[in-house]
Amino acid sequence: MANKGASIALIGAGIGLAILTAALLLRQKAAPSQCTGAFLAGLNGAIGSIPGDTKWDPKYDLDKDGLISNNDAALFKTTCPNVCDLAKMQAAWGSVIGDPNYDPVYDFNQDGVIDISDASIRVLVCPY
Image 1 (spheres, rainbow, N blue to C red):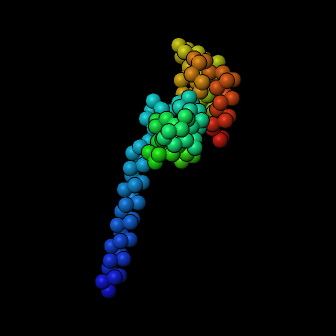
Image 2: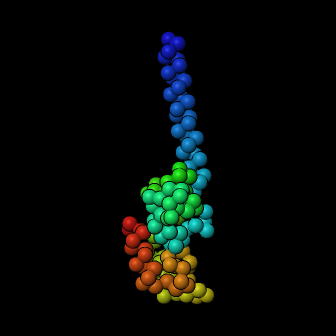
Image 3: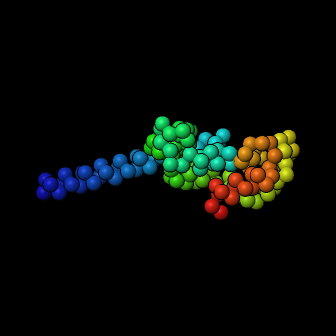
């Protein structure tokens, strides 16, 4: 009976650790300032990199596991769903900095105008 009790305690501890890990990951969401197409494009360009690689930038390692991976991209897209919102990008289409409908979220290349260049990048980084 002592072994059964120890096994149950270990299972309980394992479940507790899994819940704590999930909670910590949820707290490490992308900051609102990171919710831009330019950030997503940079993240996608860094996928597969680790510290020491030329493409490595710790700001893209959203889950802080030491590898910029599709997990980081998925976390970003969950946290910042508007970045891939085509209707909102269309509403900002043709606008430049200073226009009332300009939204820097959709200025993927950060050149101050929402145009075909941004749409081309969006197609590469947004799966829908």
